[in-house]
Length: 417
Image (cartoon, rainbow, N blue to C red; front, side, top):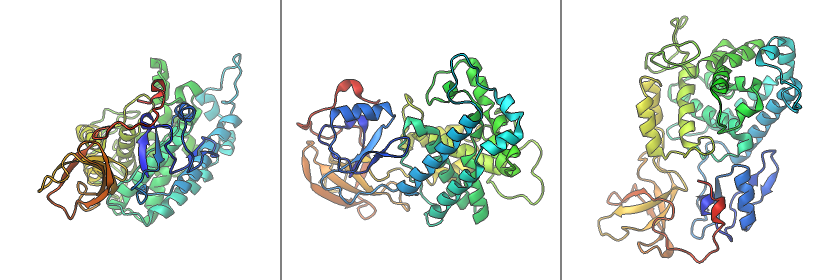
């Protein structure tokens, strides 16, 4: 199978992995043969990448750190928890004549808030993610970041939690601390739960007043978590994940020291950022680069590294960024590549797909070549680049090195850019 962008979808492509609706039901099952009208529906719900069958790539599997089934279950549980809360406090199904309750009004009724918010659901999700990550290799990140509009924030929080947990693992956090890290990051943006619907739409164009209100989610999140008796460490992640190392962040203008996040024996220095929050901030920025809101182009691993380096030191903890950079795979399963050189010039110009990433040498994955330099399809050729030190590759652009096929194209006007 191969992962393609929606703009590459052609009539006749066969799904290799099922596609789910926001509500959890299967929208399209694996094995479904795609048609133009289906592409329109996928665009409407925000799906931008899908897995399809490809001859010669039957052995290619996504390298997710947490299984698709677990991720889907976690997303649905978080979605239900958020919707249930918003319904109970009067933020859903508001008529045009009614004004929704302000965040301050909801916070002024702590007992009602506490009863309305199912914190145990977040604990369950954290435990499920931790159980799968316990056996994961912390040396390499594998985040596919396929998400739909309706569950954008739930998927984002889960992706961030996975990255934060692996960073904590690299810093030798205890098992309890790693699970707390996951729990804290899942709740990092809980303050959004009090905001009006129009502010929460992914990619929405907001007024200056809306942006200022949205920034208050850090304070709201802290208050919510303290009302719900969540630990101060976790509540501080909600409060501090937008602080900067140079003191230019919000809401408290705290500072960092750009050192590795380690446990301190006594109270943390006053005015400094919580170590969990420093990790959470790096995880959030990375995910925002590789899986941004709609209408913002996603960055490649190479470009995301450049962005993180630029933010390192002043905005993000440079030690945490350095650790993350060592974990970002240059190539992951499903990426397109082109051979740029080999000792015999046998495969120069050939294009193919990464079959498996390589945690020891991130620029030398296992690849399958499927097109020759003329763009003609060939019998799949497996190359293990860690054994072929003479062969170099680069990322191939969409359609590069592939001859135009006679398959029916999807309508041009529904392409997702």
